[in-house]
Length: 319
Image 1 (cartoon, rainbow, N blue to C red):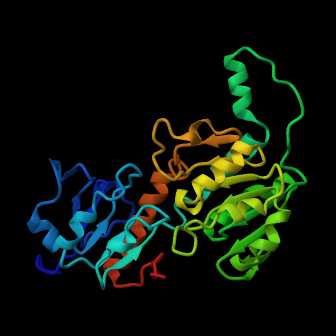
Image 2 (cartoon, one colour):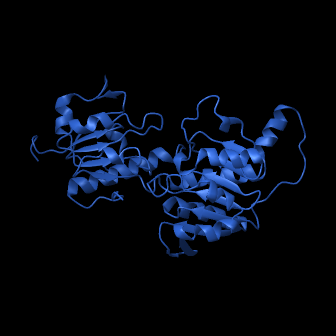
């Protein structure tokens, strides 16, 4: 390749840290805060030559790269490091391929889903408060064993959640956008939720945010759950109607464990902070030690495919 035709990549990590990175790429380090060590965005001349953008990973500033996209006329591929792409998908220019990080966050998010479920059922937050207050809070607490768990969103993360649930002697129901068969049993369609919700002791949300899932968990969805049911959200905050959930929590009929909220980050003074029966974690489903090595392996593999002209994986098709 000549200098004029060498593909240009904006990468959020040093090139030497990416396993298998093809040598036939011109790579520049852009991590939101600086480009090639210079504070600020990439210079206009570099943006004009960029073919591939690997989006820096940040939950606090998910839109930081969005203003740069129109300045990249040569852009062909955008690779995110998140499984969800709802924040960036509407801004992808026509003709540009968007790829997500399917597979990178499955294990970590599934771990947190199980952690939140067990912690909420066994009232681990209450034990921590008891320890702080030097109180011995003995008693009987709900177990996961013999419960029915409904996974809403049976993609890669949903499958990983079930794998971690299997040793806990609970029944698992699976729901996805459309019905299909899976290794451990049938996957039901979203349209069948009214039949399944009354059977669920625990509902774990793992759906992507889209027009069809925004507000999916509304007052009617929650009312269909049995008394004492637990809602666990490791998907996106707007999948749940916050006001409807607050009403159920305040009434003491349902419990919840949320890794994501609407709004997010949850501002000081918001009633969710002190809602009864609620455990909150700060959107850390994918933020674990498992993330970085898996993300770098994915980036290296994707850039190798790009350099060889091979089909990319995890391509997002707008719905």
